[in-house]
Amino acid sequence: KAIKKSYRLEQKKRTKELSIAIKDPSVIILSSYLKIRGSLKGWAKFWCVVKPGMLIIYKSPKVHHGVWVGTVLLNSCELIERPSKKDGFCFKLYNPLEHYIWATKGPKGEMAGAIVQPMPKDHLILRALTESDGRCWMDALEVMVMIMMTMTTMLMMVMMTMTIKMMMMMPMKGDDNVNGNKDDYYKSFGDDDYENDNKGDVDNSKSDSENEMDETIEPEKEEGRPGAAGEATEEIEDENKSILWALLKQVKPGMDLSRVTLPTFILEPRSFLDKLSDFYYHTDILSRAACEENPYSRMKEVIRWYLSGFYKKPKGLKKPYNPIIGEMFRCYWQHPQGSRTFFVSEQVSHHPPVSAFYVSNRQDGFVINGAILAKSKFYGNSSSAILDGAATLALLRFGEEYTMTMPYAHCKGILIGTLTMELGGTVTINCEKTGYKAEIEFKLKPFWKKSGESNYIAGKIIMGKETLCKIEGKWDGEIVITDLKASNAIVNLFWEPTPEIRSQRLKRHLVDYSTQGEFESEKLWIGVSNAIKAADQEGATREKFSLEEAQRKGHRERKEQGVDWVPRLFERDPSAPEAINRWVYKYRDVRPWDPLTDLVEYENSGIVKTRYRLKAPMVRATSVL
Image (cartoon, rainbow, N blue to C red; front, side, top):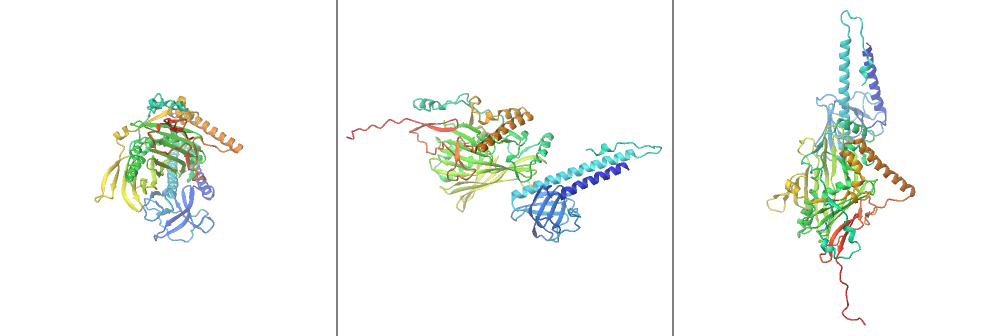
């Protein structure tokens, strides 16, 4: 009898806690308008609220008496994405055994909901306005469904344990005493030196900056190979997953993660500024584009280079460090013909986080300037990293500029399931001078596809309203191009990172650690990186906190003094001074290379310069008198 009494008290306690969560306006996981399809297949708009264990539907956001429509109990439901020809994002809540999914009472004890269109008894089809809103809802509901399933399983285990205990404690014949402790039953996260290939030429030049090229540069020591083709996945250890659950206390679905402190075990031991350089291991393709006479062929070469930057992936799923304001990263790639592609990047803003970068190889005829505003959105069981901004590639010989955008990275399975990363969104590469434009869609894997059917892209090159070719394949594998101008639609291999292609990657050269400045990425993050590589998460967290606290202190001091941070290498784009993600390199040089006067391009302390031959002074043959 005592055990039964304790069980009833525990049941009442949980019922009371759930009732408080339902009525408490602050306990809301997600809420917004959704369209719901009724039994008569008509769509109507309702205000939907996700609370622990349930989806509550109202006629309007003003949750007063009489506007409650119904409550779906999530513990008996499953959730899937649903194909739809209508606009927006469609998904379905359903009971796999076709059982009733509705609660018999409302949140305030209502016996009947407001009179609306009839609703299905065992499922509910919902539609959000946009795909991002829909995925946010999918994640919020998925987490709640899994939590309720876990709680139900735990409750069943408790009930089974109590039943067994009660059976064990039932008096047998001749047994007068029943003993037991009931209280126990309810307790329950390089080059070693800078190789100057043109040293023989420049020694004859009497320039004040003669010693600027003497910085020590060393080749990159690759600690891992580019990731294998296929879905990028990782299993999180239980200890680390518990830390991620604790992270839920800081965030809500739809929240921007730029101000959230992330655990160090999900970090890749390098800065985001370093990560941006991954796109330039195949800039020899741009060297070919700069020599191509046909504008259509130039566009195809630019697209080929753009797609070559995605297959390099870290082992597992990792996020690079958020750069510190004023942080800088620089490197270069040596081309077989002797030229060099220089990369310089700087963190020009912290809130919002904006990274500016400049890439130059004037000798081969191209320059790139760009800025990225990194935004992260948390949806519950997934998050998206959005790179808001653009890069402009200039082909100097032709005076052409190609403006290109970036896809977003979508990571799912943060709390439940296998951690998986995909790229999504539609990007554009546009050249106003020639009129050619490319549109490429990075496709997220639909729920009905198998695990290997991911990383697909589909694109086209257009001129005005005419589609000239189709491009399709996998961004980390084979991509083919179909020429629609030909009479019989010829299909050719466009790009594939085969072992041979990977072996031809240009060698990246980094600045020697001993000559780096205080705010260069490697030196700045060395304590965090060493701790992560040594699997010392506590040490990594301490080092990371120290850097972030110093940044906060600097921000407070500048705010008190009323001064703004002034970047060293970049400045606001004069054509868009109010745009937060439009920055240009202060020392940008877009003049075509002149072999008669230009000797060598070099970089020193983040400034890319060109050394010239001295011209002989002009001497008049006759007197002007």
